[in-house]
Amino acid sequence: MARFLASLAPERRGGVVAPAELEAALVAAVQAGQEAWPEVALDPLEFVAHLAAGMPDVPDLAVAVAEIHAADLYLACACARGEPRALAGFDEQFLAAVGRSWRPRHPLADFADEVRQLLRVRLLVSDGGGPPRIAGYSGRGPLIAWVRMAATRLGLDLRRRERPGARDEDELTLEARGDDPELEYLKTRYAAELNEALHTTLAALSARTANVLRLHYQEGMTVDAIGTMYRVSGRTVQRWLAEARRTILDETRRLLSERLGLTDSRLDSLIGLVRSRLDISLSQYLLPRSEPS
Image (cartoon, rainbow, N blue to C red; front, side):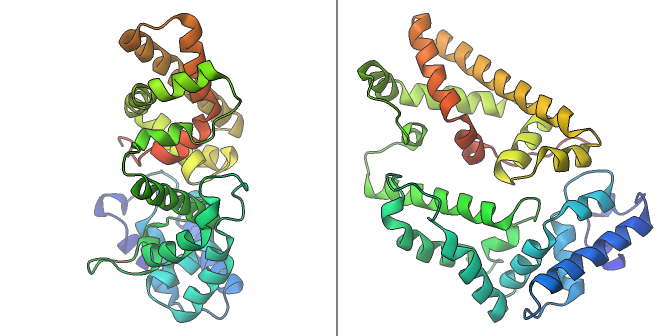
């Protein structure tokens, strides 16, 4: 626990709630990593310091540590340090899974092998003398979800390079549904405006709302795990998520109405596009934000 506390920001080291529970949670996290990856050589104190570096700003550190995907974080920590057996395990169990969940017609499926090769370099190789990107995995969601999200973003970057005339907002309409000519026209004509309105709406969210959405959609945390962090029930978190979705859709519709002057039917069609892809948009475009203490 001393190593863990020393690795926290100075302002967070005092006033630890339930130190005995924190110590027990840290020991359990180390044991979970060692049991899952017995062949990986990693100093437990290095792992504990790594764990501390990614701790969310919550009052009960013991609960936060207990909610960590410890085995995944243990492997990621060893990979960040270049441990050969950890790198081999990451390749076999995580990189090998990239692309398996993409549907046959998904735009990324055709070059999954290329994405895997480039992702290996992007996540595991140090860039410019700093730690490799896998060091940024915090353990608050499953490692496989984090890897798949990184793969999706890399795949989209590759697609945009191959299509120099494409715009970032094209991703909003990657999964076109149906053969409605009117809908196809709206997606093409107002893609930039739709993307801008959604980004504006997301940027205006409160810190708590943005963090809850990020934890759920980007980190893959369950509503119960988020509720534990915020000391509320999972049902309350579900309500927060539902309210956030309604706010995003309503505000995006308001912005589009002000900027485009479309009829209600066309606005409804555009918002239908946002609604159909909102989960994907949230997982891609939300950025980490800190809540005020």
